[in-house]
Amino acid sequence: MFSRATRWKLVLYLGAMVALQGAVLWQARRSIPAGLPDFSIFYTAARILASGQGHHLYDDNLQEAVQRSFGEAAVERRGTILPFNHPPFEAVLFVPLAHFSYLTAYLIWVTINLGLLCALIYLLRPRFAGLGQEPFSLWFLSALAFFPIFIALIQGQDSILLLFCYGMVLLGLRRNAEWQAGTWLALGLFKFNLVLPFALPLCVLWRRKVIGGFTSMAALLVALGLTVTGWRGFLEYPAYVWLTEHDRKYVWNTPHGNIANLRGMVRAVFSGLEQPIPQIVLILVSATLLVTITYTWYKTSPSVLSGSLLPFAVGVVAAVLLSYHIYVHDLSLLFLAILCVVEFLSRGPAIPRWKKKTLWGCIAVFFCSPVYLVLTLRYSQLQLLGWVLLAFLLILLKPAIAQPGEDVAATAPPA
Image (cartoon, rainbow, N blue to C red; front, top):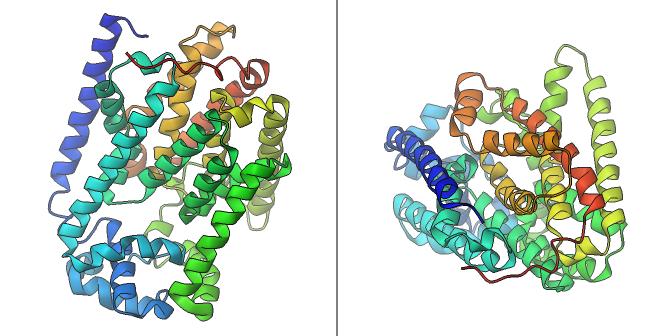
């Protein structure tokens, strides 16, 4: 797909981003064994379940006692714990890691995440006619150079697992396996804030097989959560999530500008106004975007249910913007949307030149690691990236409707 010269330029640029991120990792090398990465929340939950105290999973005092047992310095440095605010069924995934030391468990999880990235690339490459001609090594280098994926790796987050689930959704759709796609989408409900905005338009369009797979798996996950925590712990979860999202004692609730979604954008624009005006504006804007995505998918149906790349990318970007809670590592999901858009652009689509340049410019911003470092660490204004995401999405809407089926049939094997 790319010329030899272009490929080498990409390798040099992506390599530079990886080198920069390697320097960031070197700076953080002492914080990892100290228990500062986000992985501590999963390890904490796993230790609680392994000790048979699942019904107290959302007890802050118990979580603090567990976190201090392996990361006393980290708790003191933050001034608070990192609470496990994920659904109870996800904690089961990490129970096997509770039998290792914190650092060993962390390294095992990082290795699993790298394996998921390799598996995702291996499975998706044959489904991209243009990008599939590029070597596996370039795909993998691109993934490592994408700053949100890098952050997800070093933080020990679960965002790469969600990226894998979304990749399996796309793969299922391109194979016309709608039930399978719905099942994989439900498996991503450990980050329900990033799944429900994607699933809701499918429900409105009444895609029965997708909905059937989604609801069946979701019911199994709910049952698993009930088994883990019992009714009392299960019913405590919604209030606990709301508390951890708004209580200022938790460190991430202080830099409000570091959420690159509609919520962060509205909060920044209306920062001087009293509530509930910002909430009303956010609801109206979010509802408008959700209706727009639903209409786009309606106009492209049934091709969107056959894995058409551009409508799928539109849905993924919209899910990121509509998510109530999102941070840098959650933006890993955009890697899949970017692949879809690059595949689309590689075919020389009949869209205005300025739109092509703008899309390429947005992709360049998304793959520029210094942008994330400056906006998060220096200014705490990652919400500015939300405007780039919104422009990216709006430009994609018309091409997604006008040319929905051009990429469905292409499944050329990679070179």
